[in-house]
Amino acid sequence: MDKPLAKYIDHTLLKPDATQDQIDVLLEEAKQYDFASVCVNPYWVERSAAALKDSDVEVCTVIGFPLGANQTALKVAETEMTINAGAQEVDMVINIGELKAGHDEQVQADIHAVAEAAHQHQAILKVIIEAVLLTDDEKVRACELSEAAGADFVKTSTGFAAGGATVHDVALMRATVGDRLGVKAAGGIHTYAEAKALIEAGASRLGASAGVAILKEAEAAK
Image (tube, rainbow, N blue to C red; front, top):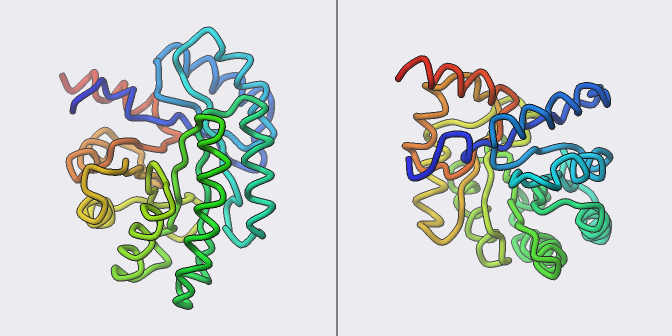
């Protein structure tokens, strides 16, 4: 690992029934453990940015989430609104159906529009390809289109489909983008062993709701 384990982790709470109290606990934990970011739904961005303003924990949110099938203009508007509210990183879902249909121009244009909106405000764009729904060839194509469109990261999963991050998918995505983009593994990461294996496979960021437990397990393993 080339940085502390906590700095690999986007401390995540994206459940639809997450309450303000639960978000506040997430924010306190993020400050205490110095995670890379918190990843929250757009509604909670402003509260998160206010709570974390004196820390070096970033605020990450999700765009076109979790299905990816919004119109591009809506994804762009959501990106601009959330960045204006304090988000520094945005994780967008690609149009999965268009990718599977082979409509690469539309997929790339969708990502590019969000990348432009994010980068105008110095925000980072991570592109969620929802790997569990794709063949390996489609995963490679999704990564190539994300890179061509100007993304900063590719990301495995929303955590809302039938599967999450796998070592195979992370290794394939890293092989595709080389060291030019980050690779974020997300979905189903519950243990230190899983986190370590994904980092060794090429993940430069992990999206996890179990970040505190993972850190405690890592500390106990020393």
